[in-house]
Length: 221
Image 1 (cartoon, rainbow, N blue to C red):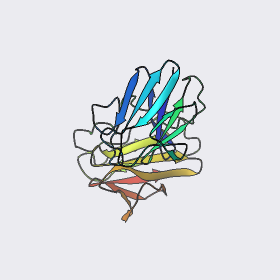
Image 2: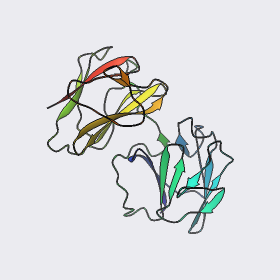
Image 3: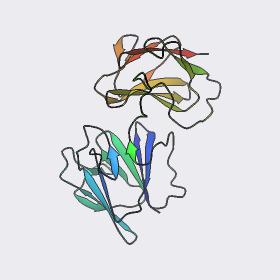
Image 4: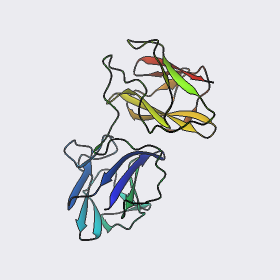
């Protein structure tokens, strides 16, 4: 069964099996594949299946739809094609078995978004696949807010933090340590008072991350 694998910054955030003849993609919540990002139009594109053939059609989106680096209006997809929508990359896999994609993280299969916030309004770390971190042992300690004092080990390859719809950042374990980058929302996070963007910033033990009004300290041993 064909599927679409959605990623940003080489981190897989969504995987959707194509089971319908017509699958819509866009920012609005009524789409079959929802990508909650301002670079994505409300009704951005549609995926149509006709037998074993799969077609992708751009729905006059603001920022366009690209397949293998070229803007398209309507195009038949081949297994392995790379689709670009805003900062998002979507890989088309004709056969869901063995697509060969590096699955750093696979989460919700219907909506691309961060987890629901905790009672304090701040979502502590806790998203991603439970994969070993090798020789690196790290955690995030919440310094301010209702969750102050809470320390959460970073036992996943990717951990997201923040307030959905306001500001979300991701801490990713890499071969030589950890990096943090901005995922979505208008309130860019900062590290030691310096604003960061979608470009990953390397973390060192003792760094203070501030996001959506909450301060956290990165601790690595």
